[in-house]
Image 1 (spheres, rainbow, N blue to C red):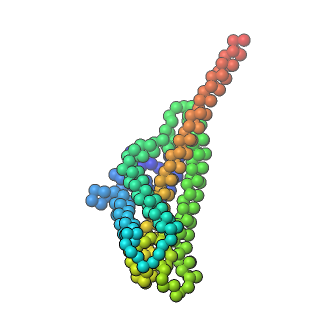
Image 2: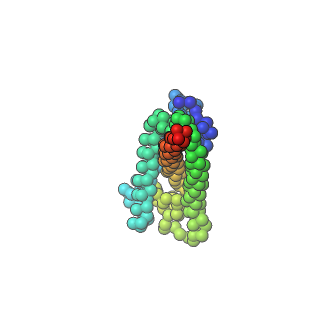
Image 3: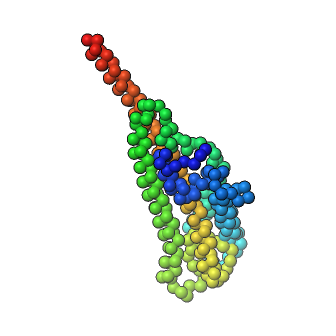
Length: 251
């Protein structure tokens, strides 16, 4: 399938391109390295690295550590890990079915419905396209704000913490249990902080991409259904109008 243009589809294609998600779906149309789409390759390498970081951090649950973690923190860390691996599985499934998604993208075209009656009601598609762009842009801004708050929160907490606290680990984004001593963790805190930033960014990106995909296809399906409904109504209206005109002529 050829590349789509922004003006010929009823989805927020600009946002898909900003995510580079569209470039990953159209794997054969963009730069390749070792016969692999460069964007897919970058995402794969990034995902593999952060997955290794998460596995490494989980070792802290199976060895004796010099600090104590509360049950609440254990629950939160386990929840984060489950969500992380679920996001990894989800993006792999989506990219493996990219050819199917590209075919489904035809539904988003303004010329998908080719009947004369449907063409008369394309304004419904334009209305829903504006709604789709607005909703997905709001979702993008909201997700970025959440990520920024998530990243800067531990820095703010550390700023107001007492500097003589040595027996507890400094708070981090997700407080993963890296298998190092408390002293080592606090001494090289900035390194572990950057590791958690990289880990946190991955599920946020996947959630943004997949939710935008679901929102786009849901709204475009509703809009095409609205066009069909209006077309059927207009067919009945036109037939009734022609019948009344014919009866008027006969009389």
